[in-house]
Image 1 (cartoon, rainbow, N blue to C red):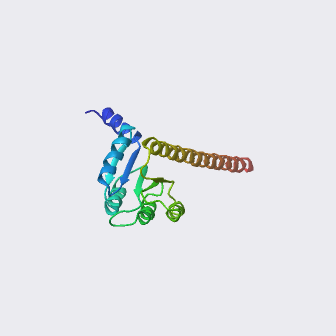
Image 2: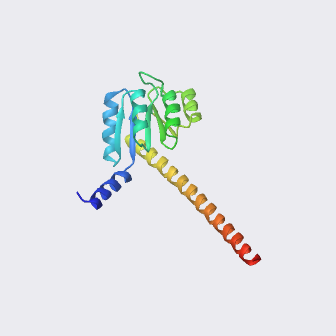
Image 3: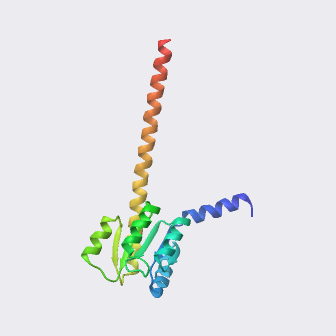
Length: 168
């Protein structure tokens, strides 16, 4: 395989949004994976918080879908740990035992959405896409701020340099 083909293959991989699904319900894990993959996402799964943390440390994920009730850790604790490991990753909480207290706690811990099981696959995909659009918009704003800052600094440096030449 030539260098160009490798770059094109890598580019195709990079363009695909990646999702980590964390749930101890194997049937839900498999069906959610199939649904999300059919929408064009690359998906990895984890049945425990420990496995999710290991994967988050070693791979990039655009989105994590976290169950609140996991066998080795509460989803809210995992949410905090994932926030520390990958702050830019979009974290969406998924639960079969919704409560106002849980929802508030998740929002306070910076979950971007809170979805109740059983969920409509189309609704889940819509929420995922909306959150990705929001992140892309925020990234564009950040890029524009950096560009504006650099342009201002260059103008300032050019002005200072011009003044120094005129003083000579």
